[in-house]
Image 1 (cartoon, rainbow, N blue to C red):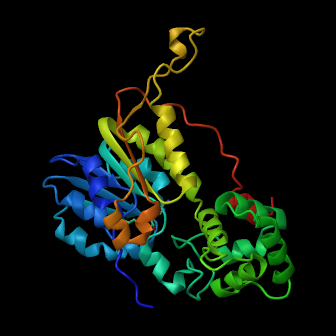
Image 2 (cartoon, rainbow, N blue to C red):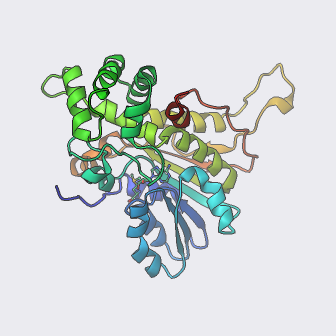
Image 3 (tube, rainbow, N blue to C red):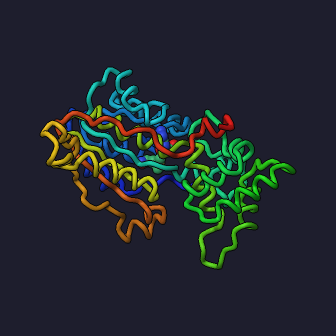
Length: 329
Ligand SMILES: C[S@@+](CC[C@H](N)C(=O)[O-])C[C@H]1O[C@@H](n2cnc3c(N)ncnc32)[C@H](O)[C@@H]1O
């Protein structure tokens, strides 16, 4: 199958909320095929730092770096390291951060990356080039960890049955290909004509887990809060409810006014660090969905940084951790 070029979802809206202007410094945390980055660079006099953990995405941006006359710096890293990336480039505060989270269609369409149950390839699913693959997780995780991962990150109600079948089968033959895993899920989960492919949720779960996508998002939002200037903009486009919930809760909590209790002294009230620009998420219009079905589930949320200090970061999440699961802990 030939790979389709990446069409940036909600690109116009994302850049409109970011509102780049001459002299401003921006971070595109998910460079991908550079659609958002190009639109930011189209505004004369902008300076852009663009991050992607995928080496092939960074390599694909080489021409754009050359033609940007020093305005674009591309960095291969995780976006949770956003603040460190800026600091290493001598940038202390920025005017805007844009995030278009999830996988790109370039990644999905390449059988060799192992993201798609429709294409046979190695069971990899890593956006970056380091860390355990989905095959490693499927080979090593305990049955209960597998069930939790598939349930929490895939919202799959047959998670226990799938985990049990994986553990029973992997003793005979390790799962090394996308096809082998998709076939197993297809055998265990019945589906009716017109349903989504039965492996959709299991693949989503493994992909989120292998790339630590939810931790990445949560850490990056807090990092953006620390590096944005007062008046700086944060724009996030997400593709499924687990991600959108994180963005919604983060912005809801950070923009809450009159927090604390009236029985507590004034100091207990934490000033909002963001003001919402979108009360409800912005979604793609019918035309965009007709041209690009991936846009159907996209949600955009945006907010503007206030001058209040960044809030303390929330405690550790209760999600299963990649390092613990691989250690057998
Ligand atoms: C949906 S695509 C972005 C497309 C981009 N907006 C465009 O216009 O071409 C998401 C990209 O973000 C990258 N990505 C996802 N999570 C990441 C993370 N935690 N750190 C760095 N890059 C990440 C992926 O490798 C992928 O290339």
